[in-house]
Amino acid sequence: MLAAVASPAALSAAPLPRPPAFAMCGVCHKTVATEKSVLGPNLWGVGGRKAGTMPGFAYSPAMQRSGIVWNRDALLAFVTAPQAKVPGTKMAYGGQKDPKVAGAIVDYVLSLK
Image (cartoon, rainbow, N blue to C red; front, side, top):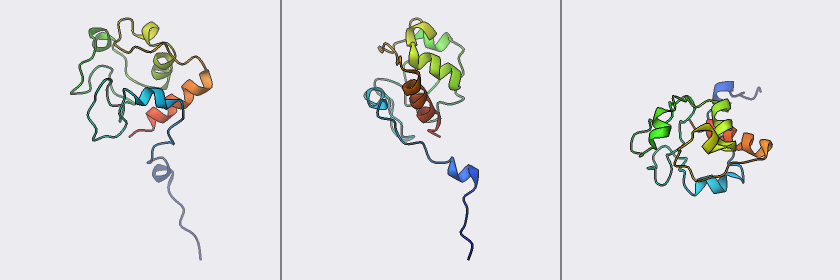
């Protein structure tokens, strides 16, 4: 008897495991579609979204004007140096300096869909 093999789309449907370094991010950011934004915007579905546009969150004018569409490169730049990527952002975080850790955070966030 042949075992069923999941399609690539089905395999990528579930979010990646949350990396340990996301614990700091999780203090401000929710990651479940049904949760309301609190201190930071909910990150569910952020990949491909224009920065500063999630309903229900009061973004800084700098973020609203940034014109960024969140893809891997943009998120990586923001996670490593938020104030350099969007001067005037409300995000009070110095940035993740370890490229491997930053990449794991970004990959996790992009899997939230």
